[in-house]
Image 1 (tube, each protein chain N blue to C red):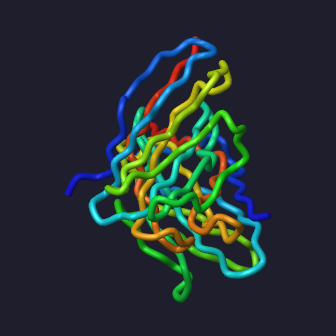
Image 2 (image 1 turned 180 degrees about the vertical axis):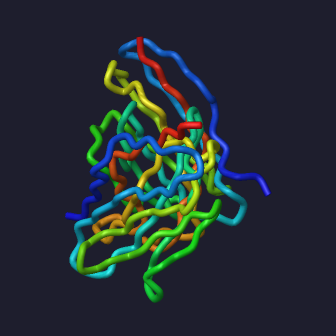
Length: 114
Length: 115
């Protein structure tokens, strides 16, 4: 079975632009979470979606938004990009949205802001 | 609020030597604990998890971890390190807060392996 897939792999944008990152969860997984990993740090939680509804939001500005589709895939959108948004964006899926469910990560999208 | 501390930023061990990576968590009840490994340019792979029961848990690739409530620790161990184990290791705790299911990560420990 395919794991969590993310696209694109790499992306270069300039300040002020917006970006859309995509994620397809493991088949059968209904929960998708997004994390931001800045170089040298652990991943930080951005959003969690379950059954197309937002279940949680981390401490990120309103420039960040996300949604989940009926097929459980998800998009992360970031508007008005800042240099500080340069990071590896990781998507993780799990069967359901509870704390004891292991999350399975994709390889991430490397976003560079010039 | 829950938190995870990994005191060692970088550890170097010789191939064949034993390994212990430290992790301390902050949470009042029994936490859900995880160890993940990240190779350069890749996502995170789950090594093992602890929910309850036996405090020594076995994972993939020969890793194990021991939950010690009295020390609020969940250290990762491997008896004999292989060169392919060089990577970054992250300890994480499941969040019981407003969002059910997200993970709180430590800052990671980078493991280098000497030949």
